Length: 225
Image 1: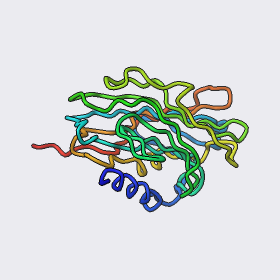
Image 2: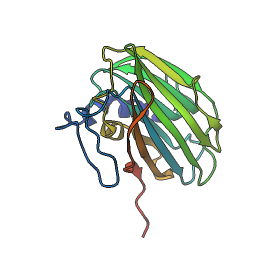
Image 3: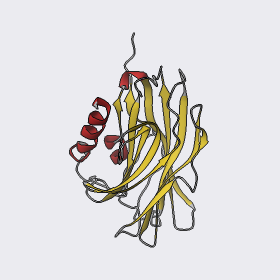
Image 4: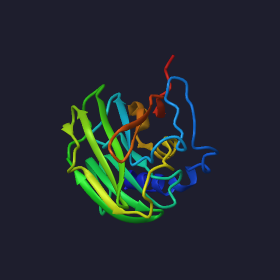
């Protein structure tokens, strides 16, 4: 099936889209917080606030489809999480809903399916928070605070995956890795914008370390003007 082929091809290209390791772990963006691991506690949890704005979805062709990726490191060479939106692909393709997946480099580990509804509302805006947390070498990918017309409110402790990982902090996390490896994989012209609105960093006691409010765009449809 063309839809499945497109999805698999996009996922197979993930490793080739990841950039080299960052030159420094301290950075400053205008209007955002300064983050320096030398002067702050270890990062144990990272939250990304996402926004998806649709134009005119089509449930007759299951479009659009997208994936969002989140890694504890600056690349996808080890354990990372992926979420497919408006389709589920493992072990077989099904339209609608979303699927959480865990991967270790090219090795698929586990998946969970949630909901079955397909995008069908013109101009719909879907928002959610995507988080990674490490605790005693267990990495957890979670979706929470989701809001949509298609699925209503979604996310929470039931919408998560956990895997063993050989790291004890998220100090090497980079939001650029999330942006560079996430994509609208099918029906991109039906998406106005897919972006990360804000990133937050927390310590072991759930204290907020810093907030990065820079808008990071994964996909934006060109204006007709």
